Image 1 (cartoon, one colour):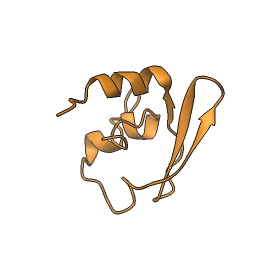
Image 2 (image 1 turned 90 degrees about the vertical axis):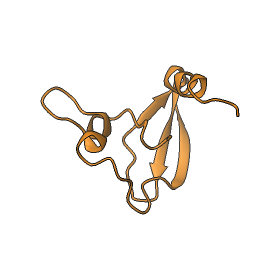
Image 3 (image 1 turned 90 degrees about the horizontal axis):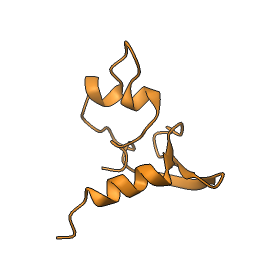
Length: 73
């Protein structure tokens, strides 16, 4: 779920471009394996995936929304 929630333009899309998961929803090997994570200023985290993707900045607000959408059962 965390990888599919990547907020970058390549994954989420932008005007005139559907984004990676809109056109091909299947995860390939390495796309859901977190290789590294680091702070971005005081507002978010940058995830580096095993496939090399690293352009998404997960703001704390975005992470909170993701967490609120997950049931604890």
